Amino acid sequence: MNKFTSALCALGLGMALASSVNAATGDDAIAERIKPLGQVCMEGDDSCGGAGAAAAAASGGGARSGADVYNASCAACHSIGVAGAPKFGSSDWTDRAAKGMDTLLANAISGINAMPPRGTCASCSDDEINSAIEHMVDSAK
Ligand code: HEC
Image (tube, rainbow, N blue to C red; front, side):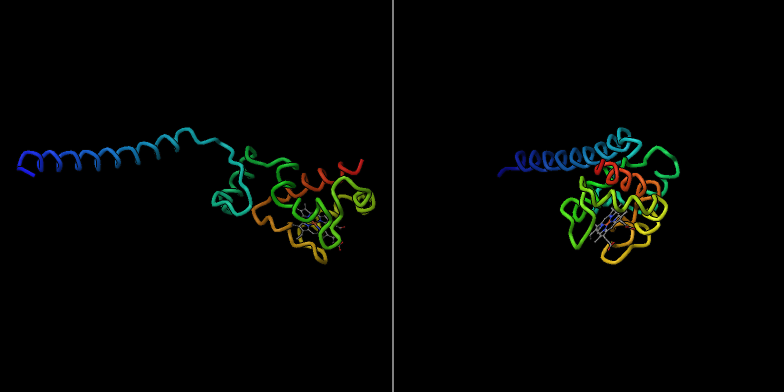
């Protein structure tokens, strides 16, 4: 390699580095600008941070629908009735509904027997848990 080509190589490498750094910061900035206001957060996702979820719930814009919460956090047990969980779309929920929504919500929040507190959705607000229960109770009708 002569002096000229090695200088070219160094220049090329320098430009490649510089442009990849620019691309990285540019992408971040774009992602920041175009990110949605309300973020859907799945169980196990980094965006499920308690503070973020609480802020979303507090702003009123980020509440997840009952179906979303059910699919993300409750279906694992309630779709097929794991460990005696009342099954989605069955008369199990007609029986449970007889307890009244307040009791169902309180038990879902604190847990009951094999039902874990908040159905393992630590980032779910009370309203979101309530929507998920309504979604399941409605499935029995
Ligand atoms: C690890 C499995 C599991 C998950 C996940 C789960 N549940 Fe349950 N759930 C159960 C079981 C088991 C029962 C039955 C408890 C009993 O009555 O013995 C139950 C019962 C319930 C009941 C009835 C409580 C009552 O008082 O009769 C509600 C309401 C409920 N779950 C809501 C939810 C919601 C909402 C979610 C999701 C956010 C969820 N569950 C996720 C296992 C689960």
